[in-house]
Length: 236
Length: 157
View 1 (cartoon, rainbow over the protein chains, first blue to last red):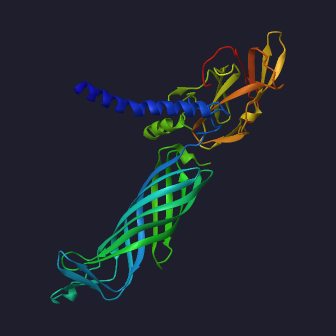
View 2 (tube, rainbow over the protein chains, first blue to last red):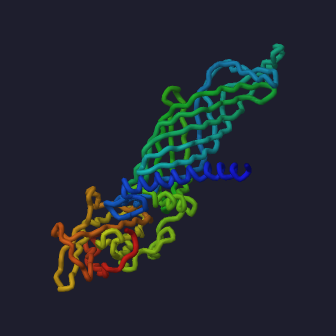
View 3 (cartoon, one colour):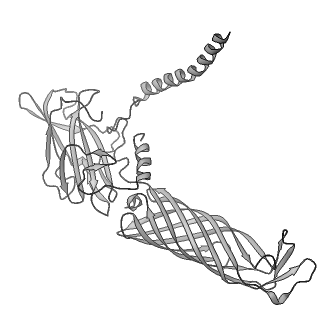
């Protein structure tokens, strides 16, 4: 009984392998490409692989500017709220990182940026018991953004230029827990351009600017050092 | 494209390109005959196809420069020599019309293997020697001939 079970199990394990082998053989017979030929006109494609893909890491400082309106923030854990009586500009400085992959100049990029707020509308603490102290207004905070962009990059000599559209999410937080706190999560839809110069085939310096497509006054500027896995990102 | 997937992955880990004058790329040597012209390090070698005894010429092209380089392998002239000494022109087998001017990215390398057929269609002469002249594939290359015995098999088929 035990031997019969082992036979059944062995047959079950081997059957898919045999089927796969038959399938591969049929594919090979039908397409004449069972082996990996690089001869042009057989299975090989002329000039395939003559340009490497794009794979680049970037890191550098960013300047971020946006706006925030009058609002009341709330923090359940701290059981306090903060209030912005008058909206206004929010500016901050921070650091951004970016990872880009692409081919033939078209790319997909992922950005992350974290900034400390330099200037923002004041947030007044308002405890739920309405015992807040308006004199302790705060204008410090953080900005965080994470986005993905899709775009096109070209090379002119040692220079490169790119443009893209991006979507993502971000949050602006103003105030200090637990006294006062406002968090404004937001959707990002922006247009971004960048320009750079190749210092070596693997290292570049870039400058970038982006602007929101639906929120007036929201812009990001930055410079970055780029490290390319493949030389010159395969750009012309 | 299958051979290029593991190669691409290997390069992604290594993070390197073609290094000038090495005649070697991603761990593989260029074919034996070497030349240097303009931005290109050129390797060429020939053998007999294991499928149908036709001559196949393998090209490897390494870009020494920080800019992309153009190369036109359709400019290669090829001919075979039969036992009587007669010289028969050869044309590349290019059923999809792919062979032509292309760019190799900066500090990168490209390979191609091209099968050559006798210009008079349908003839099947037996060559004792096959030669290719690469003059003109880049403007700086004015003379570079390589001849090989097409009865020796091996290499890409």
